[in-house]
Image 1 (cartoon, rainbow, N blue to C red):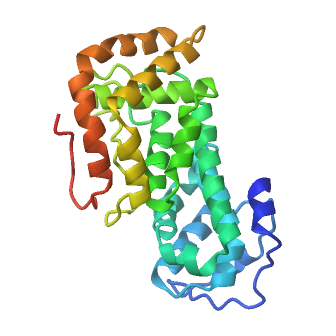
Image 2 (image 1 turned 180 degrees about the vertical axis):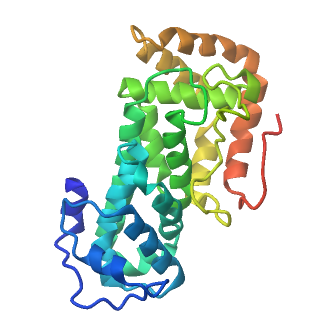
Length: 294
């Protein structure tokens, strides 16, 4: 947050609230405008504010003031440090998908600061990944999977995120690479990292094209699709997996990762098909359910 606020610049709350409250109760707006840097917003107030942003005319100066508090709440939800912001985040992603906000209300410096903050937060969660077996709906990797995939809808620079992740500069990035590759290689019921879905416990392989939030009319931005189409290949995935296994030497996850690497020659046709198919799925508006063709 300190980095975001430095880039954000000195911003003061507007003297007068002109933002219309969607439910005609402006109490949440008054509480939000009283917040000071370092304070945490209430999840219910932020949820109500997303409804204002989605369904009424936006007061730009108020949004500029409140947005850092929104980003802090988004971060806490992704990092799993506060469970009270889930409802807010579902709608906040809709707000972030509004290109007009970034093009008309924020400055280029603020715009870049939002991208950097989101990328760094996702990488922090990736860096903390441990474990190559999960069961049930509460699996921690689902959080970063969802944030990564949704970022491709919101910001056009996913190449920066993938490049930092695939550098494997940390053990967590290597673990996350194996988690992701397993979902590319294996059928739903054969994934060694994610136990099969059950009616009682949920779980299963993570959908690599599923967006978080109410983004049913959205797709990945074209620069992100173009990047993935050019970089997600059998050769690049094979190289990434091999480097990840090497990075995990002397780590608890090494043997499981090596087993997945050893399976790769038997999964080449599936991997090749899915590497080609995933960009097509991500560039498709998700008005219906999809599944792998192979």
